[in-house]
Amino acid sequence: MKYPGKLFLSLLIFAALLVLTGIYWYGYQHPSIGIDDANIYFVYMKHLAEGKGLVWNPGGERVEGFTSLLWTLLGGLLYKISPDRITTLLLATCFLLSFFTLYGVTRFARKLNGTENKVLTASDLIILALLILPRGFMEWNVLSLMETPLWMFLLTSISLQLGNYYLPGKRINIAVFSLLVVLINLTRPESLAFNFLFIGILFIMLRAEEGWKAALRKTLLPLVAHIGSLAALIGWRLSYFGYPLPNTYYAKVSSSIKENILSGVRYVLRLFYFYPYTAFLLVMVLFFGAAILLRKKRGQQPAAWTLQEKIALILGVIVCAGFGLPVLAGGDHFIFGRFFQPILPLLALSACNFALWKQYAGVTIRSSRRAVAALLLAFLFSLVFLSKLTLSDFFTSGGSGIIFPEFEVAVRGRTAGNQLNETFAACKRLPSIGAMATGGVGYTYNGNTIDLLGLNNTIMAHATGVKTGLRDHASFTWDGFWKLRPEIFGAAHGGEAVQDSIPFVLYENEPGFRNSLMYSLLKGIFDDEAFRKAYTPALVKYKNNDYSVFGYYANTFLSSLDPTVYTIKKLERTSGSNSSTSKM
Image (cartoon, rainbow, N blue to C red; front, side, top):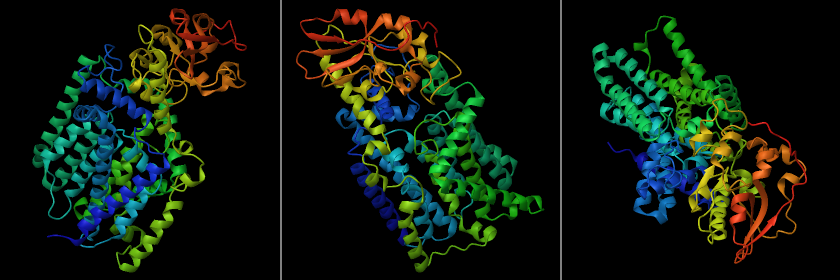
């Protein structure tokens, strides 16, 4: 049977995403290359497509400086197809993955509420309002060019597979379910926990509905797919990289469980502060789950539960896992709740289980024309009131970088890489540069880029187990620095172009530098006596350029520059200790 609302729903979601993409594209001043971390992916995609292997620097160590193997493989294929259009192809991929996720959850909500034959329903408006109007969904799932929309799509797809089991005329396709299990394993490290959860839910469902034998028989293939693909992945990582998990895990996650949980709690509280409705919806999920389970305690067997109650329990367990795992891992430093974005579609879907609202809260939500019209007005008002982060920011912030600086970091990195290429092209060999924001500069710079924060090298990532400092940026150690010994560093991207060298003031001479983020991330190495003897702050200008490059230059490299080609202005240090000898 063909439903009139099916085509309208797809067109509505596609149009809404397209319009919002245009608004964000304008507001962020054409963010065509994604964020800086996405550019890290691009480096590996490029090297893989060119046959250099999964390496950060050509000829360098094999290192898994990316979180998602599947996203890297997909990007490598797209790069092979069209190197010049890699970002456009990835943008289209992100858009489509987001579209199919939204379409999937809204269609499932219609089936759940028996409104599949409606042109426009209350659940359509609620889900779209909750997801795409607050800031964060579009940044992470469409424009960032990260693996987030792929992870969201896979988590949502396998969750809906489980939910479909209880819908009339539906069943779980075990082959598709098993394929999704394998794909999730290739997407993010959290798949280890999620897949055991999914398979456990599948077994409990089948056991309750079809008995032990059917449950064992039907969960065997997904379990073999999970364990087999996970074992193959870990075995391949050990043989290729030497470690069972991505290098990003070792660089970011502290071995201190206490520190991770404290950081994770702060992370989820920050989400609730900026998106108050997520806290309300999570409490709602817990309330409905507790009410359903309480009925069993009072003697009502699960067989008597309605399909809406069973689906609510499935989604509730998955949503709680989606909130709990980032807390245990410590969250991250990015805004807009990046790690929670992939689970929000299922949270929004849980909010649209209208039978539970009626049964347990006495609230009836209808899909009459009057109700839909009222919801449409609420949909528009939600532009402002759903969260503290809305589209109005673009008109009040005074600059897109204030809203989400990650796009500008990527642009500055690519620009810095090109300027370093131009400046040191006359050298026999391009110098190695040490950088903290490595994505953009790593993609454009033709020399070796050393990641001082450890995402793309194992020396920093594995230097210490317990990470202290800014979340995701705490892997730097002095010992690691001396092992890597970049020839230039000093700015976020390894070197900083300076148009006018006359008024330039050395950062470490400025008041407050020792309270700055750079000083903190690099553990105060600027005051180390050995560092001050080995590195000289300077402005280096290539004769054909109208700018100089600031950085801390290794003295051996600085002395190798041809004075007929380069102008060198050494900068005097007027502050700081010359006797610091402690190592961090």
